[in-house]
Length: 351
Image 1: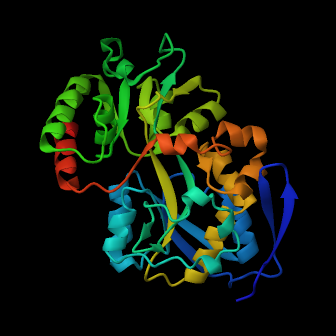
Image 2: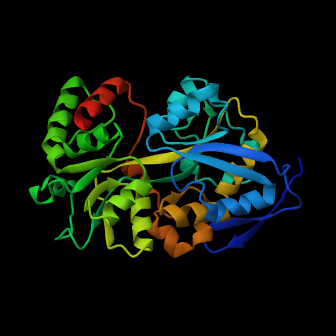
Image 3: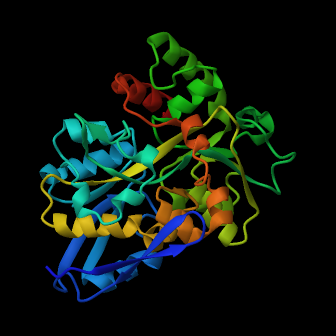
């Protein structure tokens, strides 16, 4: 396999940004890298550059929830997909199921640019070995239609306002239980007793009449806003970015102290047939170009000094990349020991 030359140049005050200069394509034209990802993580806006430089096509499947992602990745014993963009609630499940391989940092030119606090994180490091590489993170936020929701909301309490009956939407994801636990004042939203879960269920039943639909993909959620079916949503920043770019009067709010969120990692299948190319993809996404591409499309925060330099000081500050205090304040998704009970509760609410 031919190597590509990576030249690093100093830019701005925040660090370095890397520029890929291909010497030759890394793979034959029929090379295909398969991945199961959250929407936006393989957008053509930045994926095409990787494909041109490597000669390898990226074939991605979107998932609407971590459970769906885990189930699909497990199909075929982990041979169907080379990569997965796993959030912290399933990384340990993937590891314990023997579906992913340890990451060899020496195979990544840009690994040292990953923020130090994101290296060796508990969300992707097991038995002292990294099984994933963090590349993006962010909070789950309240997105609303600024023309329909007045005054501008400042807390999650607005979701319970009877004025918006049948006009809100929640993600179809049992992890939403953690958010409700925070609204109830629980200190550890991922370690809930049966009594805690009973309180959460009561709160969700109170909210249920206001729920129009449970959304599964960012595209579906954007359509719900644009059609006027909903005016508020518990959502990802991606939705705000998508709607705003299309001229929709979307706004978002992040109620302090009441946020869950996610730290996403690229993980490589233990049975990947294209592990070398998977490493090249990860390295590209850690680069300035790759990080900027992800941030421009999704509105999420990046995870490397190269990304911070690529978007510039002002944007990096807006995305909390020059001060990671917000990351430590967000209750990041993590594994839940009694997850089966969470799923049962969630199915009861949905039905």
